[in-house]
Length: 230
Image (cartoon, rainbow, N blue to C red; front, side):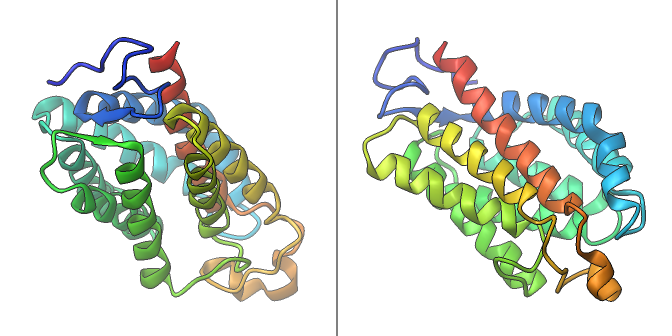
């Protein structure tokens, strides 16, 4: 296991030269699993009017299984952790969410390859690869009332913050804010992809559960970086 460097050092999450290792991704998984568990009822409530009323329970089951898989045989690289989590979500989360979230994390993990630690730019590139994979798999784009309405603004905000010289923690904080705003902004949209699209105009006025759960994962990533930099 590669321990994160001490706060304020060139490799700490709060510095521009931050590194992300397997321990960082495992801590993100712990935080994300706790967040999904805590918000599972709300996710299901959001899913009830426009979906199958199971998004929260499905996500909760998948992340608990993913955390168990990582604890049983911890990969030694950040990419390895992401690939294992993605593979587990595909096999345990029902509906379209399993393949979509599995693709997001597997693509990101494969982009990181076998590197033991990566910098902020490499993490951004990996997240971008994952989001592109989700868009390709689901055939969706911004404004279609899907998880992409949280993920695309998040990656754009991260990119903008890093390009401006911000630290990884600052970039992920910006990404989390953008993801949260993107999720809320799905409320007035008409769904054009997925189960909700069958409802037509009746999908208007409901916040998308997939965008909401995506924002939770970005929030967990920001919290992991923030706590590491504290």
